[in-house]
Length: 374
Image (cartoon, one colour):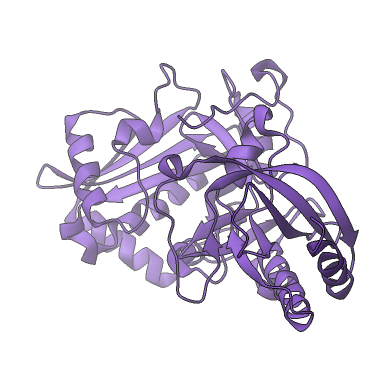
């Protein structure tokens, strides 16, 4: 089994930092008060089952992307004409209700219909998605239901804080995809927040360069969280080339070019196990970077030499790692693309830092020099 996540702090001492030093972090509180949820959301955290987490990266489509957490300021928000038209049309055609969240056979059946057409990973059941194996509800969760002649055709779930709300998930019957019911429930949540006098609506992350989540931007005037400065900025300020994932990929492409000039073989590796290593204290010695360059990939032994790039310190690091454990059976089959990085599904335990440099050429020369003796 995959190593279980260990609590980074006790549930009674929740104190989300401005942003964690790690690229992913998760808390498992026994309860979350409304004010506490507001603070988490304000600092780029999001619900996962009955826990709460934050991350800088997502791995989708066989590539690494930055995760930009988003919110909508409801204080002066107005639906534009096209959104009002969509809401009116669906309000005339369907029955819409809002109530505290419940799960039943009908909602589970809808989830299974939605799951058959969903492109991506989903839990086995709606209960697993919202509650996992937890026997308690940490969040104050509500739901919107949309029915057609009594038939449940769409559902959305959202959590309430004191001054904010979190959009958790929306599902719909694939037979009704032409009605944009998933997007409609998000608009209904926004309308609920405005009427309730809430300040912010948090729909989750968007990943520039991976358009699956771009529907969250259709509502307009979305802000994104900039963790290094701990502030929210207009979406128009996003510069994709300056985001963490792009910086890492550019830096590692430069070092690969330098290694090639020196005659050192290398290959780019995407590293899904970094999430496991980051969330389990027993694996603190394991690699926690999502992307690296493997040097001398032709060598087939228990050790590997690799180069990572820390975008925060703008440093390259040359590491000697032990192939600690193959966890491919726990991570599932990763997505790949022909010109993308090759996934590595082994936990890699750091043995020794062999070098550190701010330039690609310097770390490449160190790699060439040490390659014959390590």
